[in-house]
Length: 388
Image 1 (tube, rainbow, N blue to C red):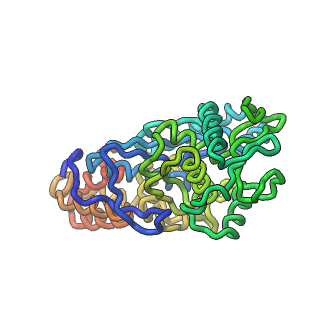
Image 2: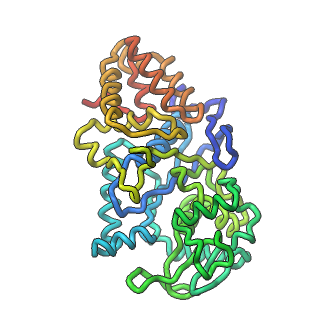
Image 3: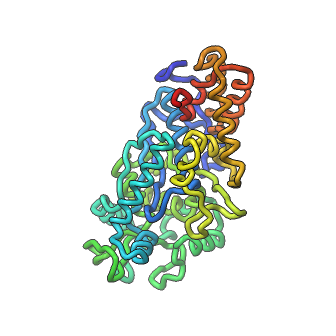
């Protein structure tokens, strides 16, 4: 099969909302939204794992003949970036610009395909205000304390993405910035759409008073503006399933009356020292530091050696193992550099089976060990063996 040629059998991908691996059969143009960074610190390996997964998915979709339109937002105004800017004594947009540039440089170094659009939350304030008005007009939100809150009791499908019970929702909301003790909420699970700004925070005028948007509304407004009412696939780290993606789905469908996402796909966490990598814990491996010591293709292989739905632990052997694999592949020159068509087809089959990059890497190992060229198969997962 050549790029651009349609395949009869669709890909199969795990859908979080369905809880199973199901066919993913979009139209010729695939719309994708992946939650981007809050740019207040450097890109760590957990970020890289997420974006590499959706990069390989895009590569395979294009190989199957689709066009892809992937939007990856920049959350340049929220509690975390404002807090960090306050600590550093810098303007929050200056901090965002510097960290976004560093992030984009890391993504280019890892050979990620350019995203179709990378909009900033601050570019969407008019869209956000209009979106909130739609939610209010449909009776799914209320004003209180100078802000606007989504009323989860008004939306019967709240829980459709995560399928969590109320106690678990409350626990995760408290852990992930949901402010369940906000006295202005009718229900602790209600979430903010618009909030008053603190004296040293950015503020925009609105019908509900000066303030700034809540976290969840930013992605909904950007997805609607950039991709339309219903998108084919929405992704991000699994720590975003609740509350972020659950709230996105609820407010988006409440506003438009249409399905928000056809397929939800989430990346598992990368661990270090027994805990998930996170800025709050400080147990991070930064891509910019790895790039100083290792071939960026090896960094990509280190991540793709693990299936996107499996959590894994970073240790000191990860990069030496990935480097050894890269050298084995580079040394495989039999049957032409590209390798036999059967190897490429086998890699395609692994990627079509819930994006099994780990299985694809094992197949390429076997082919390389047998003296077969693996350049074409490696290129499909974004590893260019032709460069020095």
